[in-house]
Length: 578
Image 1 (cartoon, one colour):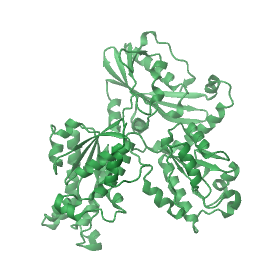
Image 2 (tube, helix red, strand yellow):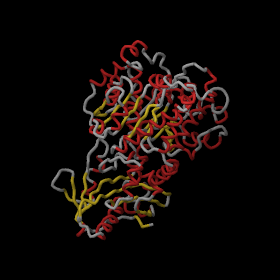
Image 3 (cartoon, helix red, strand yellow):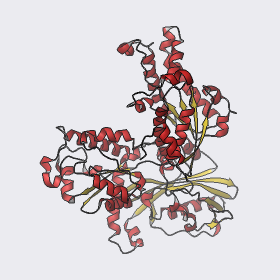
Image 4 (cartoon, one colour):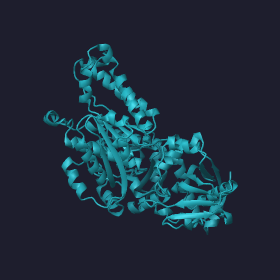
């Protein structure tokens, strides 16, 4: 959890940052002087663990750069294009309009420009993600608070322009709005007026540094690095007081006094759960006592069915978080732990440095303002399936208990009574499939990130075989848990472009179940060769021997493999076709 550095602090910190291996290519286009912003963003990306390559367009040349298919922008081939326009330039443009009718339509004409820019980017073959700065809500105070009733007011147009940009984003794949107004909050002097006049520098260099901090968080999410689990302590964190001492009637939660602060925290956690973030409890308590408020207190927002894993005992919290991580099978760096006790926070920080442990304020009234300011749960995707995640992990906890009651793995897998479904991609699953490619890091053979548009193209391609794998067992339905894409290379071979699987189903033999189906399909097409490749990343060591386990042989190049289907023997597994 990096602090927000000043511009100069960021420079110093970036100089001492080495060994970054995650490549990222970012282009910045603006209508004002952006070189300090580009430098801040480059340094922030280094601090965030990236090895960035940056492109900066010529001064105030956004449209010429985007229209020209031979421009250096497209030769650079960025992953992300950031468009950052200053509201002051927009204001000058608005003031040059003389008639009120045209002023009233200013927001619509500017929105058309935005849409045309996106169309030009796509027409010139770029599939980069586009991050567009919203416009600073700068009130010129010409109409004061009457602005909402005056369609030719500049301030009115800014509101409408931002709203239309949001609406456009909802229906435009890979177009995202970066809300500049949110990040200008709390900065007393975010504009240096002298620098503006002398250098066309529209924000202070420290303001650029703050923007870069939040952009780097967003880009981390693009790369599949984001927080997936919120772990809550209970006493004086989720409610006020100590349940074991004060009793159910005397804990503080609800609509009175300081109890309101804890209720606000619970409501925030509940909304995260609805978005798909996993909620877990880690408390030093007797389990039956700790569960009582969830079961019996009328003003509790959170209930037991909101919690994926409930751990309450008298063990070390770091050990309990290790248990939670083992059940969830996610990285420690995907976890956030909230605890009011400074000593407990420090133990977890020292024992599990990957876990994010915010320094909660002493006064619970400041819990939510502080936590929200950290922007911990940045995301780039959402699907309806995310709401089912809690029940899926509750089921996983039951499976965890079952495995301790059987004597060997075969007996365990048989006892699960698994049923699998493997089929080509379909329209209903496009969102979830794209999400898996963007989020999966560990069981990910080549770590290719794809958009919904990409997935649709694969689905309709004659040169690709696509597989969506679903699984359920006697405890419940995992849903769509694996994605495999094969590309036809020639008349006798397919190449595994993508093989992803949710870590929730590790050691269930899903990969063997899937490969049996794939080989049968390939053989039916009269093709004998399947080529595979492992592209190592800092997080996917889990699959470095996947292809070897699947009886692929090493090809002539390192990390490349080959399977001849002619002599293939089906792998044993305990998954029945649904």
